[in-house]
Length: 488
Image 1: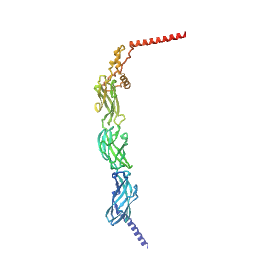
Image 2: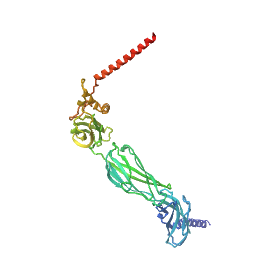
Image 3: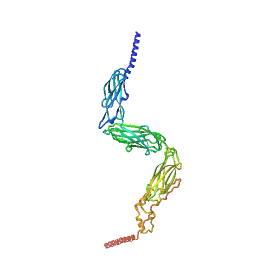
């Protein structure tokens, strides 16, 4: 008896094991093409004021089993859709190893953000039981970055059209400009297709120096294509002076939102390669103060010179030259390497323009050097000289015994011009700095401003004064006489 029970138990265990093997095989006999389970939605088909997008999506189902199957299909566990998608046909008969296509019809709200999301599950009932397959909805971006032109100091370095590209051989203090060409993929006849957005450019790397965090807002109308240089959207930033050599990743994010409040996001990485040359001395700025002179002719030239190179420049130099103005000065400089905070120097030069230098525009040249005499950079500025508008100093100086002719000359001199010259002298005149130049510096002496002398009273003025005094005395005597008569 025990033997029979043992045999029955063994058979039962075997049946259970066989069932465990056969059942999954039966369930796995129905297959659905995996790519068909993602439904693509593109809002470019929307027109006028439509708020939903109707989609018919086909899915292929295959019977991998050895027997025919009668299948019943539906969509369950719907998420985010106002209406449950329908399936046509709802029932399918499939022979062994046969396939059939079904169509899922659904309405997608026009306010879904770009990206992929779960919307429910495809349920298939077969002889083996129930199978569930997840359904996903993928919303296409309606904002497209067609390309970005990368400029350094106004010169185009590269055009990129995808993430991960690299721009080489950039230098410290380069002004980088990214110029975006973009498209709005909505049809121009769609009422809610205008997109407002922001371009953000970011970098946070201690070796790069200052962080990059720039934004630029934009609006692009439905169906509009910003694909010409005049329509590009620019974003600018400057590579810091103290940026180290190396490669850096710039994060580019383009975000937009249409009038249905659907959001679109594009992210790219742009690799920037910064390199420093061994010798790279530059003139950052060159100014004259004032840039235009007339009667008062003292000028201050100021240059900011910097070393952007990888090495210290112990034998750098800077010159100021214009023979017509009598300017010829040179200064020796010691500049720290480009990554140092002491890599630049502001050099001033005061000079006077002689009175015999004619009115006109004069070009003053400043040149930067390394290794004593090797030219590195050069900039020019214009000094404008205008006629003074008054007589020369020797013509307007008067003596103590000046006659009426001299008085007339002084009267003709412009009092207003003299006041302007005196004010300019008070504001501008500075004592000449101690010369540090190693070459000859030609500095003109400061021209005296104005010499003047008050005129004495004339004889006619004196006579008129005596007459007035006599008249006053006579009146006083008459009043005194009247008073004495009244007292009697």
